[in-house]
Image 1 (cartoon, rainbow, N blue to C red):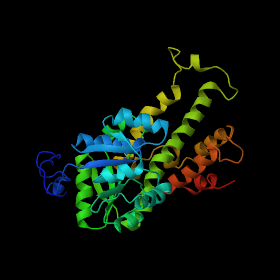
Image 2: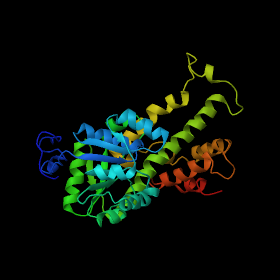
Image 3: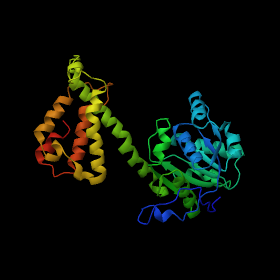
Image 4: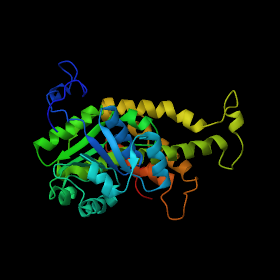
Length: 332
């Protein structure tokens, strides 16, 4: 399974490419792949592996939406029960949420269908290979292969994998070589994550990606209130010269947040601009006063103003913030 297979895997770039040092890794032979289950991640990885020349022979798809997704994205794969998928797979992908991974591992172990030397890879970000111990005891080779990407359930998911890093963890160097080769075949970039650092790795990704969704959703809500007026008035039609109010808040924020994201990825905290970066305590106080007029949402939830205050206080830690600004940002 680990012998070179020239011409089937992707080739590395010229000297100087940061990934060129991985060009001598063994390319896995063409594998029969089984996927548990046919969710967004599982079907995206399955499609990517098929594009690399592997064969997704069967998938577990229990819900109607999973069966529909499997038929659309992996049309040549059979939909079978777990025992049958395990029995026919040389590479078994456990694409299930972190919270149920251990239970699924136990199901696979109890199935009695797992063959020795089967590659078993899970996609849970916060878990390493220790969770696969029951399968390792049966002779499986355990891998943790987590794509650092968000998935929406369309063909775009597979395309995005070709631009993604994957956090890989294995039990030994043979496992690392196989995991890295699989990721490279899918067009991604493998990054080693130690078993003991998987939770921190996943926390960083969740903080950057999931909380970004919350942040932008809050900004859209506040901007929509500014466009429409806090009294619910219909000012949207006159807000633009052509009266186009569709996704107006998103259109305003889009170029700004896209530029900010690119800037911080290139410059780090030096990309900071705005009133906190300038130490403008009066402007920040005005922002908080305006945001506190917005509805907080469900009873007991933290409102947008409090979220702004916490993030602004954290932002101030990256600057030489004056005492007046820090006072404004204290809990009131």
